[in-house]
Length: 571
Image 1 (tube, one colour):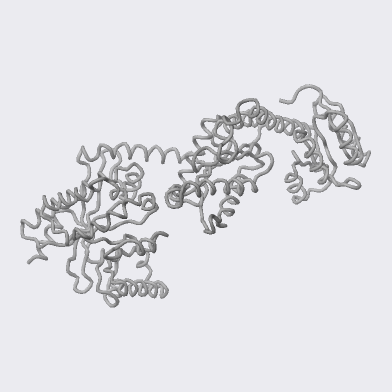
Image 2 (spheres, helix red, strand yellow):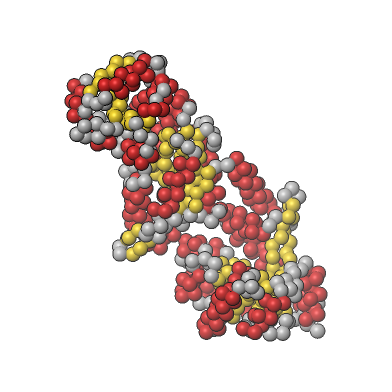
């Protein structure tokens, strides 16, 4: 709170405007002494002779304008608030004034005692806050408050600044915003290009972010690939979103590292006071929650914190907690999706689908199970259980007279990094007498593959054991072509997205035909999913002799119906 008698300097070449300003100041409730000058040169002279708490500059001044004066005064007196006073409501003038370091911008016709009090008080307190932060930084060991790599504030200094800014926002009833910037897949850059390149990239990121900020904003580094921005005073909540959009747009331009272009994206979470909380703890926690929503929303976007996000986080946590007990409590079961030969509609194989019916949550969608399981590393245990259960049930079917068929299993990249994983697979095949030639692993290509280069050494061993490897959801991620170039594979699984519109869209039909020709030229087998109509089925029959998962012929089946289907096929 601004207290005591304020020493205010006003620079205006219109004596009538000066007297009007003083009359408004008299009614503002502030205790003050006012000095007036008529040019920027006189204002600088006065500032060098006396100590002022605030300077008010008219936009139109002789010789040098108020805009030029802002820069000159702030250059010599960085902690002296400068308020622009103008007869124009031109937004461009206001923007330029703030860029040059103005603490506030007031249109003369809007000048009221209340507005003047608020503008002067908040401008003084805001720069006082900045000064206190910097003084705090220099009083204590610099290393404790600055990030060693980028030399920007670290978490400790940021939290101190946020605490002070929040106090000021509460006093002056201002909005405040914080943005958490998480660089998507940054670990991949460190893993593939090295820590030295990763560190250099972080420095370039800081330099690019800083070009988007005002002198009042603070950029800090919280962790390896996490940055945070404090906006101590927002005019509107949406302004934080505008800044986030500028950041995403700025990242569209590649970074040049050792003559190589590196493209990065970011997931940004935004929390604003008072909407997202009124404490440092709540704002930072909810900023983090919003960032994860941005990641789960596909990355390369920003999200404002919303109260319903807490429920999603809680639900996800509860599902993860329940997953740890699901195997022990025998809560999982399998359904089987038949895969057909397009040539004659005979059964080529089956793909097990994981199902989970929880006593509290009910039936949980497979995509949600997989997402949580991948993040918590439970995917390895779950996929191992699926493989054991599939082999056991298929052996039982064969003992009843069913012919052997292909078994198609999803393969998480995490499994490939488990020591002796392939040995475990071989033991299960031996235990249940599964011919490896009937085993197909569908490998999903994700950024996690880059995290685990050891995985690429396991794939050739799978082929040597007699099993086959298909690339799952080919064309759906930027890693598809890289996988085709660097991994020996047997076939491709085409995502349903490439099938669903072929009846009505000639471009989709031509694209699919080209894709099938590519697979044929490369010698790849194909499995096509999402075939739901006879028209789609007939189209595929004409262009490929591959396999398909088609709801037109059969939906996923429980064990009993799958046994009947296989026994019928074996006759």
